[in-house]
Length: 167
Picture 1 (spheres, rainbow, N blue to C red):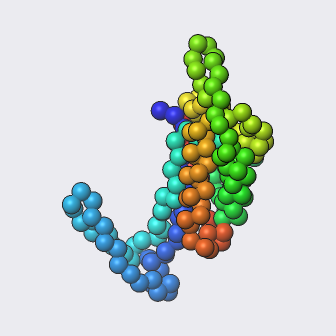
Picture 2: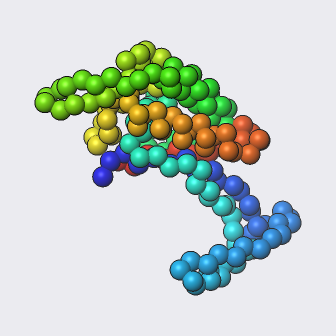
């Protein structure tokens, strides 16, 4: 249980409509069994672009100005903004050493200079949202997000996505 997050792209195919002149083949095998899919009835294809677990600072980015924080329409331009913000945070953290501190008889590690991260992508608290530390796991989520966005097709800014949060 906890904050599970996904970014999906839904591509409209509309092969049901003859006037769209959609052609192609889909061959899918699951567990050694071939799925027979009627190509002429495929309306949309959903592609899972990214998946995070308890990356509450990324959740903050997608939901900071929304009422419904579980299912959100995302435009490619927003991903460009997220990429820029992630690069800013990465540059501010990547050459720092983690410092140790003790709280409630437990030892934690966190980056000393975290002002940029707190300003741009602050940790967000919630029920089983994970840590609110700006530590190596926080930075791993930043690096994953950068890698994911940079691996998208060059026309990603003209596409539409859906951010889904489950908790």
